[in-house]
Figure 1 (cartoon, protein in one colour):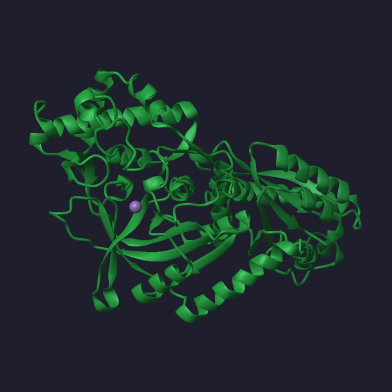
Figure 2 (cartoon, rainbow, N blue to C red):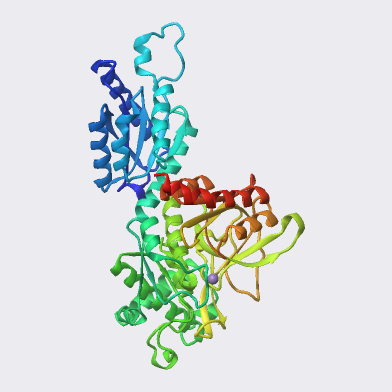
Length: 514
Ligand code: MN
């Protein structure tokens, strides 16, 4: 179990019936307990599984599903039919269930005991047909779920459950997620806009605006000694810092100090509101006379955004609240996995035949968790937005390897999740462009990957993770019941375009079928 997920549990319900007598159900109950214990002791599941007994009739199914809905610890339900559990008895319960669902198709017994198998054995090991009856009603009811097929002791089976558990945790977190917008979206930008009411209905999170006057209320409460301590005890110890920037009389030190004050301001505000994600807008940073008054953010709070991301706050630049939300979910699901996560933007292209790649960066706001080397704290002039001043930031290049990046777009009538497997390659230092950056090749190639992403209407912002794979995002889209467009090494441009056309019709009609 993972400490970060210890407040959660996933329920395990065994489908049975009393046709074979109470003794059989008692034995199945024992088998189920053993299976749940085995799953918990495998060391492969991040969330504890809690066995909730056998469900033997309509009433018992409905009861356990209703309890799952209201139990705050329960973030998902695993169902397994040890035998024929006639599926009509699941209809009411499945109609009620609003938590994520996993259908585990396994069997207590591993191999057929050819010499001893008899009807008593058969009464206990009938999931081969029992799970199909159950799966039929799930499909008939168009019930979103993940189906995991395999022996319960196998690592592969457990790993598929583990992925789903992490997504359930991310989903539970999103249902209680406030995103604060400091400023609106960047003017005229289409892709970062969208329907916040629909986002709350479909994806769970709540998006609010926070005026700069409210930011100033927290700014005024920050103590100077706390700012100085953050600079000297944290920044100067955790990051590589040039000696010139440590000169307290210099402008560099002053900008770093002001950045630290912005970080403490945002930190206190986000904590007070219970917000898990936020957006900024470089055109909206409060009082324009800050250089003389000293009250307000004298620069884009990029360093603060970098460090807050590292602590799990979702971030979206230029008011991109959909990215802020997804970045939070990306970080939350990735806890304990190696490599780190970050908000990223497609920055500039590097044409190089089969190795054509994209520099991924932003003006400032990249999460240092994906850095390869110790990040350097630097101060440079930034001429974008309402402040054109020397601005503090963490500069680094990233680790290499495979990862996955994701975005959600609002198509007007529904949301679409777009996911691209990417391969990060070695980047070069950018002495004249001092920003953190990654360099990646989208799968299956630059041409196909980017072509598909653009045809799907994907953003220039995305949420990257080294630890996740596209399986996580498939599970996420299934739980959210939204379209999921995966671009990976199996993708062809024409096949993908055709999928988009077919999906357009599917998502219109599938709602009508329920
Ligand atoms: Mn941007």
